[in-house]
Length: 293
Image (cartoon, rainbow, N blue to C red; front, top):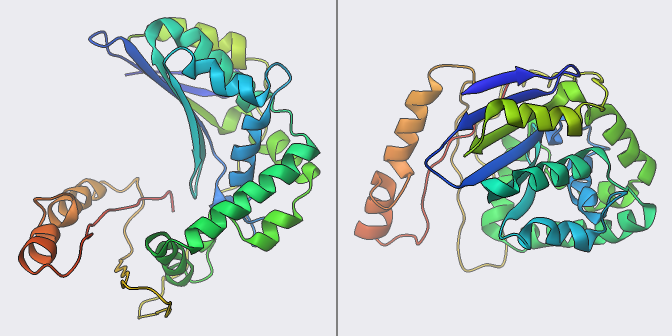
């Protein structure tokens, strides 16, 4: 693995895999739902949507075709601590993928008409979560478990916060957070580190360093106990959780192993006992989430 830091603070991490013909490349921005206030809940996720509506060089349709027409893929997601834009292409198409990612991340059009349309899309996404109990249960659990901390805010925001956003809110977020010191770029595949860094200097070198996103507040004690919501549904969805250390704690590796053995697949103890032996449920699993705080 090789690392580099551009003059504007962008961190670059690459790993050469000469045994493959493909490349996976991603841009991570230190901006997620845990950086938001209750009033700005969902703005990071809305930004992730809006950058795909067009740039100064590409329409939304051209963005969609840019890599899929080459047999590649382009996607994005938002978490509590970061927003990520990712591409997968054949190694010969890496320059195109990097150019598209740089265009999306650095030069989104951020048009007010696009914003109004995308608000409706996100509100429908919120409705989809509310209509899907095995998604909704995690939002309800997080809000209770994190005891008022930003980790418990829904990544999508609420209908009220999404409707209230103005285009200047998105432009301010982009200007403040989509800057060099908040960006990590990773690339794995049939690549050369120096070649990737050279291309990134051309594509990303012009963006300012900016300020580092504020540190996420240390969570207070999480809440233990029980909570339930009664809905008109045929199944019961249950979440049981426990606080874990941050991802910087070496004990995380042991927790990953325990989680996998306990509920990581069809051979796990939970699956074998609850589904195969007792036939009490169709879906049962365990997983772990680690954060910086």
